[in-house]
Length: 305
Image (cartoon, rainbow, N blue to C red):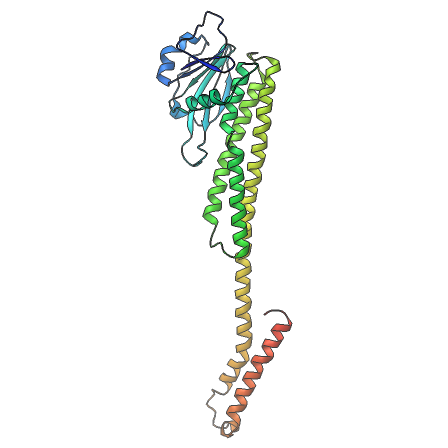
């Protein structure tokens, strides 16, 4: 698929490399790139293995800028990333993609963007914006999920959020790494080392890095929040255990004197005169009840109950 950058992306069947038709966008499969790369005259021998891509980055060459994208699936971040590569110079940009991600993104740009001052820089900016367009909503959704978990923990309704919190923290870690790579990419574009871009238009890349920086900071904040929730749940468990231990301690304190009485009168000595008294048994009962009542009053005053 070939496009010229006009007020929007205009599809064309063939690029005119010798004419002055303007800057272009090309989307090729890895097989098409191997077959047609000499036509683009970018001075690179880029053999693409899309399965070997593991990060988003850009590399400055003598007369071109090349790089790769590794985009997490926003609906299932733990799933395999979408990988594709690119190469660009002052004439245009070529995407090498077997997944269909670039075609879908370009279709979104065509349907939603009209440019009064079209340029390669503006297209790249809109393309990068499409990658992170829904991320603010996704991170807000994660924030609400963590809020719900925290509320349930405080209300005692959350059984064990460890797996949920661990999944969220893992996803946020992957997103943070993704944003760090996008920041590096945006800064590389903004530096414009090969002077492929109009200096006035490099502001687009600065705007993009600022947005990604905010997303990165929000992601780091949410990850810290998830760690706090894990600690909160552990503290709630400690409080419950302390209450149980306090209850067991109070029960033990009440029954210790009763156990002493039972053990004392369980001794088989011949001369224990009170064993012959008629009022001995009721007296022991009354004394035991008094011990229980006095202990409960004491614990109540100490606010242990």
